[in-house]
Length: 60
Image (cartoon, rainbow, N blue to C red):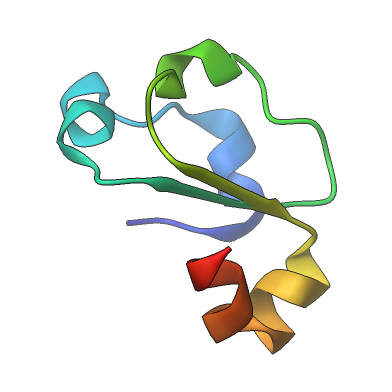
């Protein structure tokens, strides 16, 4: 799976989203079309927290 700035250029495969147990948004910009993730547990943190506090973010 890709990460970083390139994510703004493509969307996740809908089947990948459907198969996911949850979603982690580690970002500094708005996540577009969040309704794609409806019904999924979501962790929404800034990039720094997503990198520095991975375990805490994963259990919140």
